[in-house]
Image (cartoon, rainbow over all chains, first blue to last red; front, side):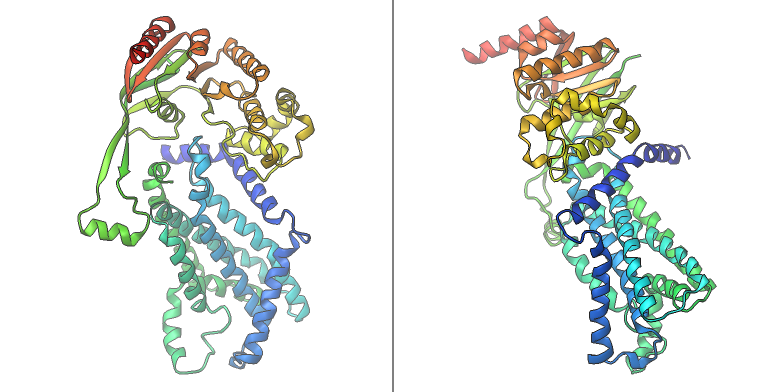
Length: 268
Length: 247
């Protein structure tokens, strides 16, 4: 309990640093680009356009009965991109913070946390793209969309947990950086970003249906779609799976990170 | 109550003979039993006490563990053995400008570095002019730091780091920055802080500076305390070493 209190005090003292680091990343990301922050919207929009074009014409996946495929697709894309960006930038956060933590005492978890927060900020900006796609395709705005906060918040915690683990591991083994990219690509294909496993036909679909439930990302994306696209209230299963994955990831992440953090300085 | 108490601190580094930075290498080496570490003690059984308001000096040759000791006190390193107790807030001037981002402007960096040191934006706002005034770089406020000379960077850094009234100021070779005019200014600022009750720990290779400013001095040699005492005694002994080596 006392430790928890010390942690909170630490965090409170350094909240402005967190704020400033996010501000710095933001400035640096868009410095010298003409359109600046518009890219956060434009980028997912263009990506969505490409994927819609590919999947609805060349590889005909729309036949599998997804209403409003563009919205379905962009939701999957945005959430998965958030996860991808959050974890892979958090992973290298300790390495890039090396000049700092070698010289001053700063609670180290602030760096992965900052990266995940920054990814969230980006993600929130790119929700404008989602709104645009919904407007263009004439999708209804459901009141349940407000509930989308839940899958997003739990996904944030989930990503933070994974990010903490990766950040700690990467300090000791740089290989993980290269492996993680491959892993997330594989994961993307099993997260139902551009298909619906429930209505998909074909022989392998049965197999996919039985396995996809083990992928946390599938649940977060599914929950988000339920509220925003279909106007449904989250069902019990989605609620507890989202929460459970988030809590497990965070607890594991904190344990791994805490047990290793004093050694970071010696290895970076 | 002492401000800083260092009790039997040892700091061990594992100097891996070959660095294993990939999993495969690591496992291969582990399986073959080739994971060798050479232990290296940067500090061994170091104890010292710094009282409130003292100007404390650390001297020693290169590689004697001075900077490591400062980092242990500042909380950057966790000692492998022993304990460090610090009563009060620390302003570490271990390397000036920790947390500066060279792509950001001086103005942005003042806020970033200030928060790294644990200041609030409001406080920085209120002291902003003072910081800029002290650094004498008002004309360059909106220039990215990468276009600064190293002297200019350290001016800004020193100004930020000393803007608060810290209980303890840890200074590693920082007074060697800048031209002599600025050095004088820095020394004056440190004297000001001292009169306000700040405790200072100074590392310097300039023995003349140590003699002029410090009350007490510890001499480190190869990670051990060789001598602790008042400035004159320790410095004389240290200088005698110099002559010994010369002859």
